[in-house]
Length: 220
Image 1 (cartoon, rainbow, N blue to C red):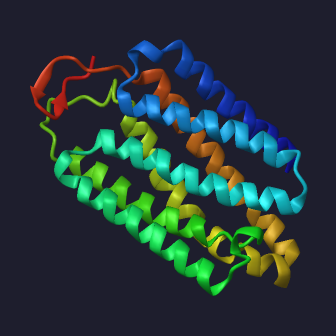
Image 2: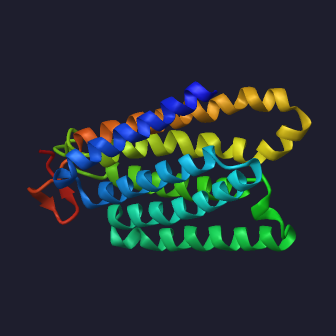
């Protein structure tokens, strides 16, 4: 598992290097995504060197900050008329988190990551909106230079795929620790897939400058 963690960190580092080298070519949403990875890289290093209790609190903080970065990403990416779905997701997340905290005041100190489930629900909805917009684009639209396509391929695999692990992780860790340890490898595998697709996105993304209509561009 330690080797997987180092591979995971190395892959995030490769993403950051690619984003830095191609910064002037990146679209605004992809720039926001690179800032999310910078945050994730930093918090993951702190988590690795923290005790178990502190690492749990940092994970809760990370999930909430990640939601805000993803909100900004999709705010720039989706059509303006879809932004009501973004606000709705943010409201549902905040409400669910507040209710969970009221029911369990120690929630943020526990390794119970229901906020990861709430994040997964929001991300599944927002990814779905992206792909819905994508299929409505004209036939001449090219994905060759659209890094957001590859990034959302990663999102749609990772966030729905980890919701069950986030939701049942605390329970399974107490009931069947061995099974939980084996299932954690699924989370690492999905993480690696996510950041591999993000790396493709950063390597291929390019600001598209020839408009087909106000929302659609021909790939460079």
